[in-house]
Length: 441
Image (tube, rainbow, N blue to C red; front, side):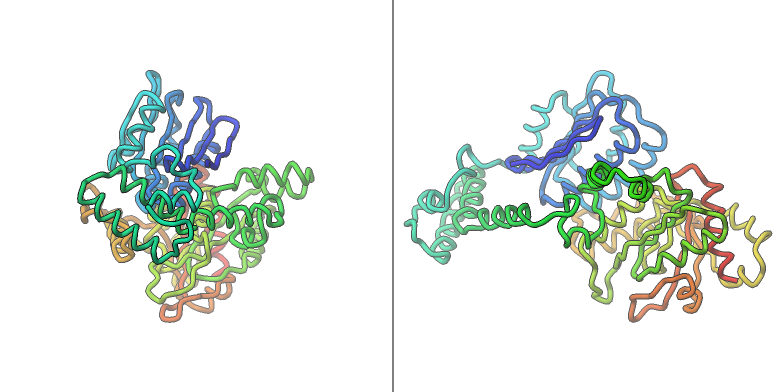
């Protein structure tokens, strides 16, 4: 069984039988599509535990500097937080893909064909079930285990334990793999999962998504397909203007543990001459020291919004350390602000400084605390130089004035304003941030 999608210059599929996400990128794949399809692949890996990522870049010509920066600062970081069991690149004689950027990811290999990639993926993830195992019925699975067709779950569990001990003592990895798949069928778990998938497929959809899906906003999985479907069905200028990025004249994205009334910031920007501002937010709880509820797909939603290329990124004091790779050094901009902003505004903002080493430490502590990494702590190579990454306000009245409602119980309301380092419209970004800061007066 496989899930798949196709764009104009690339295609992607997940093959359940081999637990591999297979990405095929054409040589003419533009930057926007390249980023979307590769993040889609990473999200498929995250959703399928232990999956291997196979990327066929044999026809890929040299990618742009902007895409190289995006890979280095955003994509690698995402893969480290949601690691595949390995990455296998299919290279070609003329391929100029930047393989060196992935040198710190475990189990990365370059091969010549997709067949070789599948063989290596099978090797690093362990054996795959023998032919015919995955097609068994519940009765077939119980018979394979030496049980009667009416054996109950207790009998299945006991037999599984006995057989697994025997195969483990024999060192027979293939039989252990087959037994795990058979047990999944005999207990009804496989059929239950497939029934749930069928029920979901039968549920009423709105532009391809259920009501619950839409409550979670856009995830990477189907973002572009949803946009295309909506445009095709609606065929109206209104929806076109809402969903297509080039119709907006600036972008502001908020990521943190707060609720946001985006219309407040929209009105501020419109007041300063931006006729079509894009303002959106993702409620992300990290690190979750207060056991706060986080909505499903929160991290994916945040990643989706950040990939849109916002001019300004707004976080809070607890959240900003985890998005260091997105921040522009604002030292020169701050010098300009000191000349242009009234003293009463400058007194309300505090410069926030951070180093690459501090960002690594914060991410490592979070992953280790949540048992999401087995890597040893190794800060080697991370720069300890602090840069100015944002401006913080701690006045709760000002936070509220901008339309933000703090969700923390034991932490004060704060906002940190930063400029996105991964876009080239620095002048626009500075003007957008200056417009927001002026409202603090």
